[in-house]
Length: 56
Ligand SMILES: [Zn+2]
Image (cartoon, rainbow, N blue to C red):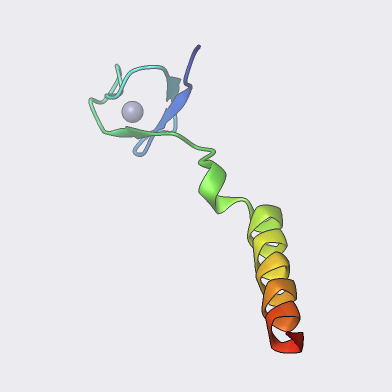
C-alpha cells in the first residue's frame, strides 16, 4: 500500500510526510471526503429518507 502525498509548498509528489526538497508539510491530494459526487449522492439519499419518514 502506497500513499502518494503532495508538498503544500512546491507541489512535488512524495510518499513522505515532509517534502524532501523544502521540508514543507505534505498532504494527500485526493482525500475521499472531498468527492463532490459522493457529497451529492449522500445528500440525495438523506432527502429520500426524510421524505419516506414524512410519509410514515
Ligand atoms: Zn516542497
